[in-house]
Length: 300
Image 1 (cartoon, rainbow, N blue to C red):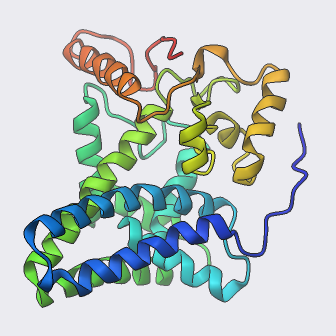
Image 2: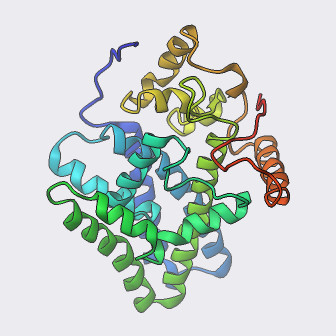
């Protein structure tokens, strides 16, 4: 197995900068809400959705390789990244580690259900954490078995839900707009998970996830497109993923049919995934395959 040669920095400046921009936006959004016109609120709202999506790339990387290594700073950033994306941090970590264990196959809590379309999957996945305690939240609670994890889980729910509730009580339109922003951003995030495992096979080491080689997407989102390499070894730092992908490809661990020059958010990729899952939704009652079987397609 290839070895990682670089040591993550004490402070990952590019990713911390992305998170700092969210904080600047959040202060402007909440502090200036009463003085802003409707058009200005709408524009700032759209910027907020983009920042939620961008900060999810940071949150995802931080769960595997801390973007700030000093313990106190790492603890604080974990809470604030969770707030930025609307995910109670510790709960999402547990959920995400389950995803890595099963790679969108049977046992993955985030797996698409039989007969479920892409839009239905995204909406269901978004609302599940907000309507705690659903079965998913019970599974997360049972898995929070290590010392202090349940207290941390409760704290993280208090940070996210408490902030939202406080904003709604303070300024109802502001709070509800912020919630709608988080929900919209989370739909995009869950779509990303769906697209990143389109056509994959959790039983095959070379087909755990899709690889996007889009230079723009990977430059902006910290190499999130190299998802196959990430699933093979989740703790590889984001700046090592391109070279690690090349090493895996040389060893036959990157399936060519699951490599695409398009980003998962590219309209062509979105249309293909949506069309395929819509067709499977129509055939669900007569199709004998399980949801763990991904459609056999070439996404390139």
